[in-house]
Length: 136
Image (cartoon, rainbow, N blue to C red; front, side, top):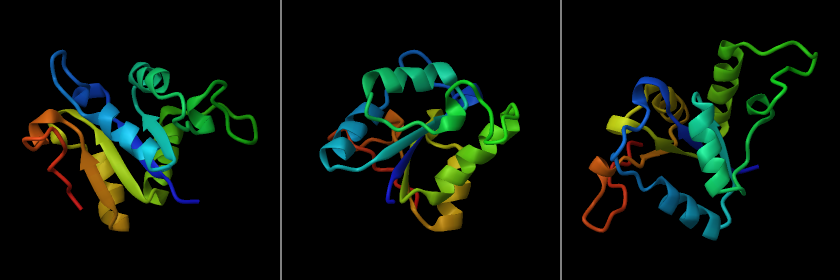
């Protein structure tokens, strides 16, 4: 199955108040084109915000409670991150919501698979408001 991956980066790259992104606009365009998008994040609150605005986004089972594997074992933070990386590696493209226009986590997958990575931080927008920072 062909799908894109939305990587919402939190932590030290969490969007600061007033920082502008065009992620929602790009997601609407992908939806209009019939592209399935799987959403992953290291920030549950930010991910929930995207899911509330875009309920059609797909979320992997390891991001929904109870966070357990198929054997019923509790997933660690590392388990979740490795599953996210596996999804990024399988995506046909990566939409990255990350301050400063960069997150190595998504870039690793894009480079390894030679797929397009589009960051939606406003500092990388052209005069029409669309991302011009397509890394791969």
